[in-house]
Length: 294
Image 1 (cartoon, rainbow, N blue to C red):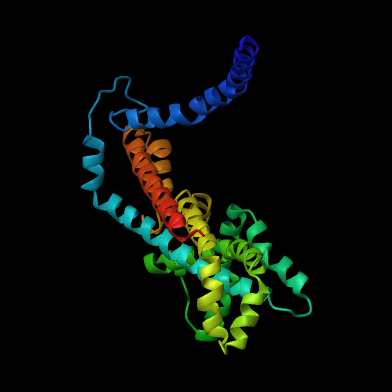
Image 2 (cartoon, helix red, strand yellow; image 1 turned 90 degrees about the vertical axis):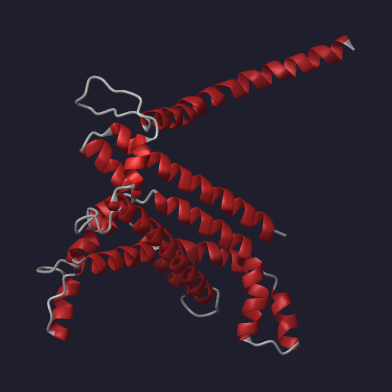
């Protein structure tokens, strides 16, 4: 009994020695910044003010009565939802094509990954130059064909559509690779049995492929929804959030308020709202994954 007690005590000591550094690291790098941000969001802290005071929910009241912030919030939601839906659709379509047997399939799969491996900020500046009204290659082609001078990044609608399309182009290739791995995991016997029963291509897709890939699609959908909420470099490199604030999303708004205008309290309030949205999406994703997992 004494030996058993000593063994448990030794195991607990080793457990504490291994877990404590990790726990302290997470507290220092995750828990403290979150708690500090929540505290700052309830103050009027500004870089050039030596004194700051507790203002409670005043920053949040100002945010939700500010038409500019409501526009940024609404476009952020539209941006991540439309981008994720299009990436899921195009990713599944590309994966289905890459899953077919044809010559050069390995090369096609490699080329598919090119958009993904290009650094986001590089892709953003490249498209900014390609779409430049005066010197851009795309603009030159459109001008030659339609005899008009396109200025897609100078209009709110054009800049928003361009931002979403570039984001979809960048991320669909990675989504396709993940779905391709999922497609290759579907047993071929299912499709053969469906063919024997007379099921066509569309019916096989909706009765076999889609249900089998649904947990993977939910996981990737939730991952990209959350990930794109932190999309900063693409927006900053392509449009700087403009024209005006037409393409500004929440992370860029945090950057403007906190690091350009030095309104740490107000910027922290935006960060807290961003964190709440991410948490809600994560919880929703976990519930959906539990519902569809098998």
